[in-house]
Amino acid sequence: MRLQQDLLEQDQLAQDQLDRASREGGAMRRAACPGSYDPPTRGHLDIIARTARQFDQVQVLVGNNRSKTGLFTPPERVELLAEACADLPGVEVQLFDGLLVDYCREHSIDCVVKGIRVAADFDYEMQMAQMNHRMTGIETVFMPAAAQWAYVSSSLVRDIARFGGEFDQFVTPEIAARTRQKLTKD
Ligand code: PNS
Image (cartoon, rainbow, N blue to C red):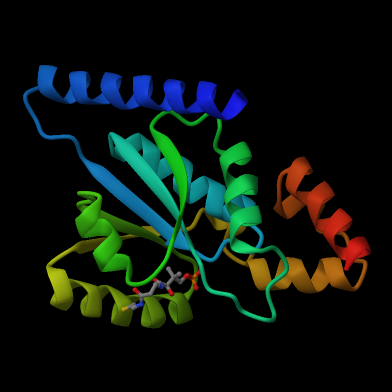
């Protein structure tokens, strides 16, 4: 019932955005924010919120890779993100399989947005951006991480959490609680 309600609300939101785009005489601009998000951090949420201010619609895409070092399963990450992004207009969260460029083409996504924290991110992301561009012509936009989150990563949060350290400031209260719950269950 709740899911159906959510879907109806999402449809309405999508329609509102189409109406806005056509009133303004421009095509709707859709961006993807792909990532592993294991778990989503405040740095990720900052990039998603800032992307939502620049585009009509944002799809937050969780890669469906089944890495053994992962903490949350990809569907659990989608759940965490959907809750954390619930108040952001035009943002929806999806799981994706296969190549990012194929997903973007199939869903008429014009642009990939990636957050960049440090030089190492740039090297890694640049190669993917160029490869993706070469494959389908899709553009990637690099968004500088907010200075206050520039040193935060999911892998550091996972490590701190696993060894009982304090990580609450780097994630939402809900994600912190789910992380603790997950670690005590496993
Ligand atoms: O959190 P990450 O490591 O930045 O996420 C990486 C992700 C999932 C965005 C990336 O690995 C990806 O796009 N995977 C899908 C497969 C793909 O398209 N690979 C070719 C990249 S050139």
